[in-house]
Length: 239
Image (cartoon, rainbow, N blue to C red):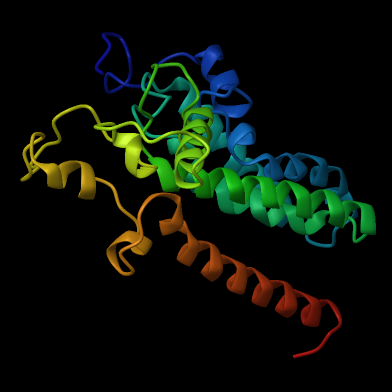
């Protein structure tokens, strides 16, 4: 990854393709993976009305500086990781800006819908594989949704079971097709396909395929309901 003439061999001029790639592209676009964060940009219009405007300007500065540095990095795409890997440190500042959104019913509806979509994207991506398997410039998110849909069809009997296929068990995982460093299990070992990637539904409850996602969905639903309840109390000034 070292380029001659770059600072430390890594940082050089702005890669303008990276600006598109890190924001709205299906490849690594932050707003593609987490569309709720688009509302953070709209919230900036209300910074001037806030009594703590310098705090919000500081949050914006962190977002812009992180993005700027990332676009000058020759490995801006983050390798085989899904999503804008090096933008993770800026995510809290995007979320903080959401607090500036108007407290109106229509804004709450949009926020809720985009939050649900963002959660779905992250859940599906994590369920299938956080590794960006597939074409170098494809969309890992689209691949994950496609894999999950294919597994669902097998699990519900819509698609016939293909003997000898990984999908025949309704498998939701996209496994890495390369040798991992310090990997103690041989690729030819059946345990590789079973445990190279797994979730707690598989390990704790012994569930397989898409059914293994049920424990995580139940837990997320309970936690989400609790958070909404607490937020409602805070809004009303209760404890």
